[in-house]
Structures are given as structure tokens and as C-alpha cells.
Length: 256
Image (cartoon, rainbow, N blue to C red; front, side, top):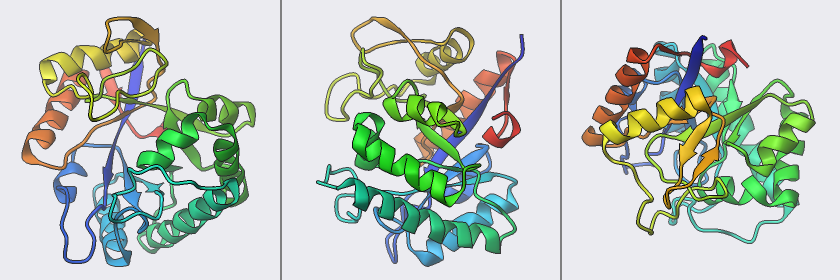
């Protein structure tokens, strides 16, 4: 049986004079990037440079819309109405689409950021507003969402292109959500532990939760972080480990 998966990373998260991440390095090892769009991080110059880096390296581009919360890096849950969620998503995706086009690329996908991502996973009103916006913007835009979430199921029901995402370096709860960053078991830092976990997700559609229970999961794309030298080395190890297991790494647009 042939196995394949997309590798994605959140980048373009510098802002003005503030630098974050190792964008120029991570684009060499992933097949898709999620670029911040100015609300939780990023600015027009960073968005432009990130799209250029992706285009230069043959990497597919996705928008990474967040809550309007630069100080909290988009990780604080805000009281957002469905109307606001729709508008925030359209505004940010539209902006990044212009930069992608300027570098000869069309957006491959959209992936929400931080608290926006977590809330829209299972808040039906917010999720439906985001899905409405995707339909209005471009029905061919791939929706990258948490595996098994409400938004993944509803997106598929609507006939949208859905990529179910898993995390190489994060722990899982029994309901398929990610362990809160402040709790034990939130992170998997050892590639020797992460690689077998990811292989199991891809080949068996299973993952072991933080409390030891095995649950179902679908892995179309693996999120990897490369925002420091250790994380970048982690990405390299994941990539080589997957290849050694006969798993082909390629962008979502080639198989969804």
C-alpha cells in the first residue's frame, strides 16, 4: 500500500522589528507553509517575503488567519461573533492571496491559528461562519483543520476540500483535541518518540493519547514547528524517518 502525507509549518510570524522563527530554513524541509496574515503576527513586508521564500523553494502557500491579538499572539480566546469570524477570515485570506499571486502562486489552503483554530474546531456557529467564508472566497481552497473535529466533518459534508491535520510534537486528549500547552504531556520533544507516533497515525490511523488510550485519527498533513535550531533538527528527523518508512512527502494539492 502506498502512503503519503503533507508536512506543514506555521511561519511568517515576525512583525516589524521583531523576529521570530527560522523561516528561510524551514521552507527547505516542508511541502506547505501557513503564513501569518497580520492579525496575530506578520505584517505586509513579512507576508511578501514569506510568499517569495515559499515560491522560490517550490512550497505551497496557505493563509494562517488568527484573532486580532498581536500582544497575545492569537492564543487568547476572544468573544468573537460568527459575523466577525467570517470577516476576519476573509480579510486575512484575501490579503495573503494578493502576495501569493504576486509571486506566481495561488493559495493552496487555509489554516486558522491558535485560539481561532481551537475554538472553530468544535464551536458549530463559529465553524459554520468560517466554512461560509471559504465557500464565498474559493470553493477549491483546501481547509486544513484538526483531525476528527466538527469543522472537518462539516466541511466534508458541504463538499469542500478538507485536509485533516495532526501534530508531530503535541500530545492528544481522548476527544482528539490537543493537550493544553500548560499541562504535562502537551509536547513530544524526542524524535525517537515522535516518529513512531506519526508513522502509526499515517499507516494505522491511530494515536495514543496522553493518558494511554488509543483513538482514531486521520493524517493528511503533519504540522511541524521549526522556530529554533532544536525544532528544525526535529523536522529534519521527522522527514527522514517518514521516508525510511516508505511514506512519500508531498503537498496537499497533489492528492486532495
